[in-house]
Length: 174
Image 1: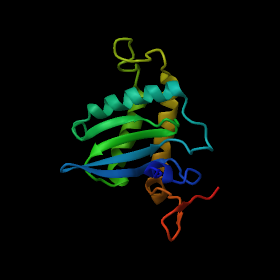
Image 2: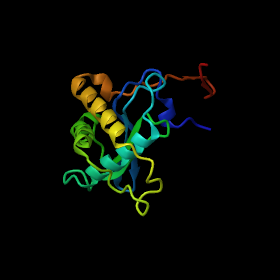
Image 3: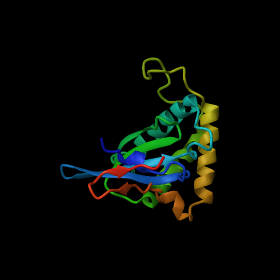
């Protein structure tokens, strides 16, 4: 079975940032999946589940109401490892091209006083939210993005190099 592209990223080298995960063509539409990495995997603690859930609600609401981006947004949701989010947008933009969107989304959390959709009728786990920790993680990531805006490494995925033998077999280092 082939290793999927997101598992070919060297998770020992990736830092928080905005990365292109994959670009797909569906019919005539180009769709791009971005990796919004909030913490350094396997080094920094992951975002706790309740804060991640809250960030999902707040940022999805922000983006789906942004006049410039709402029609481009297909999906915003957390990674299973709780170190970041995936955003899927129509089109093929560079990570730098969505920097302002991502920074604005995380900055918007600061002013939040409630979590949209955090009622039993609207959410499958409405009791699992933590607005205070979501604000802390959002501010930390937004400050990091601001301080590193000129650092090209926050926009470039580190790839794991895989040796391919003459007969097409992949060799994975242990």
